[in-house]
Length: 222
View (tube, rainbow, N blue to C red):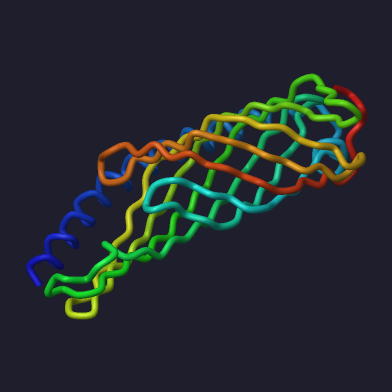
């Protein structure tokens, strides 16, 4: 019971300060989004929304907490022929055991982790690179937002303890698109994901593999 109370107290103390920091930076991210949308006000609404929307999704792996695997969902608005305003949602899970052998009085102990990321920011595409007959479009991205980490610790001979925390998060990285046709692209990305749980920073590597679909289709403009 003492161990359970200590863990709960640590989560609660971190969650309070993280909530303030996360809310502050979410306001900043929202302000940036509104400013970018205002800049688009001079363009026709149909070209802003219908023609320039992109949807994507796929597999995501994030390091930390014994490695988390899950899915990514994204949408983006093309601001011009090389820049998108992108929104990403990640959901990753992991279940692992503490130690290979269970010789302690506590017995077998398992940790179940669930990390969610909510991110927004610009994605910049560069000139097309040709490798033999294949066309790849390199990209770079910088996104800001928040993350929520939930964990549950279960042991056979002890109590089950749960906790969660959320914080401001930023992500920096890039990758490349492989264009199947005007609408469909395969996408690979490698990013540095920086979270700040319980008043401490955590650096995670993030690998994404997926596809993207542009409603009106891309022009050969790179």
